Image: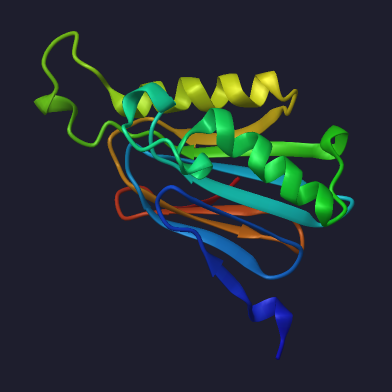
Length: 163
């Protein structure tokens, strides 16, 4: 089997770490994809986080659901594949306000809160964010190519772009 053709699909509140192929997630709305990559080791990971903090969920058993627990989870698994924290860089995608016109004035915008929580978790882990495609009002799908670390963001509203 050609390992370059291996694609790992990350679902909502899920994550994956690998050294070959592609990691992707489809249909990001207010959720945020955290994409980590070590260019020297060619090791990457992606988490599709659902909520900004554990306080917003009754079920707190899934660490991939929240930025504060997903980042350490990704880093730990990347280390096992040869990744080194000091070389890892982040890209973040998502956090849209898909139904902003339905949110009452002063109401909660989960997308914005997710973005802020992801930035905070990455800052706490001392992982720099080198690119992002966040906010606005449209959904996105994300593809991490592990051979070179490029991240392709696809959107029906905005087309495709590479981060």
